[in-house]
Image (cartoon, rainbow, N blue to C red; front, side):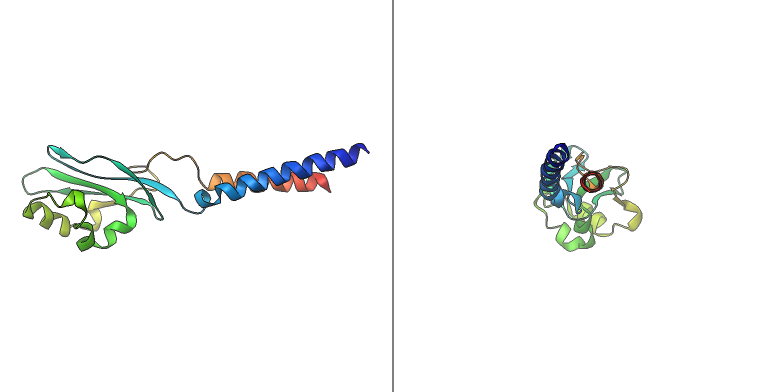
Length: 144
């Protein structure tokens, strides 16, 4: 009788853990929150938090006058420079600044998955998937 109650308890716990796992699945499959903004001399646009399907990216481009432009966004935004230059926060740049951005090289671009240079500090990650899988496996073993 006691063993049956324990199995029912573990069965309900496992259902709860599986429900939590399903609820967190979008976050465990590559959802990343990044910031999107532009910083230049005395102009800094508001940092907007955006959802990305890739690593966050940051371009740090040095201008001929010694200043620099920092552009933040999703990593995939930097693969299409003409489309990047059409962003509303980049339309205010001068022609020389836009030219410098269009000539951006790979050394100016940083994908920031490891060092969090542009990532909104979202703690949810694949760690949740691992934890839930381990707990579900332990509960399943205890039920048998």
